[in-house]
Length: 149
Image 1: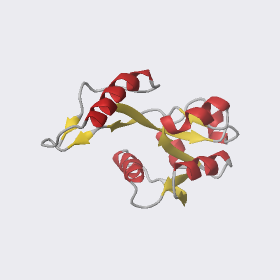
Image 2 (image 1 turned 90 degrees about the vertical axis):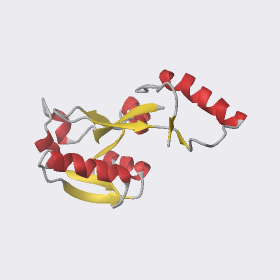
Image 3 (image 1 turned 180 degrees about the vertical axis):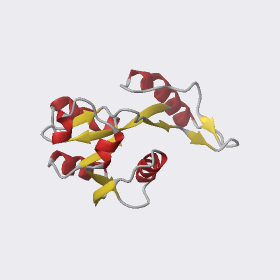
């Protein structure tokens, strides 16, 4: 239904925000605040570091995105979260989204249904709503129809 990106965030007062350009090596030197072990987002992040041959410094683990954002806002480290999840905080100046050279981690949100199942009127309405409204969301990229498994 939509395209999201995982973005690197830091507190506005964090020294990394003052660098003229930020590289993967720069963020690897900072303590990273991650979701609990086994989460799909954490696996994506760890895989990205591995793909670049860089070892990440794990500063702490948190239970969810809100906890991660609060820890970053408090200056305990940097993190990587959904771009959608930090729109409010970045807009209000509580967090800074960092542009990291060579770092792009898109993530698709898809609607998946069983191919032999009937769509109820409520499901059809939801699918129509999602297709029409997703393009209006910032960072959204709408597919023509849901993916069927």
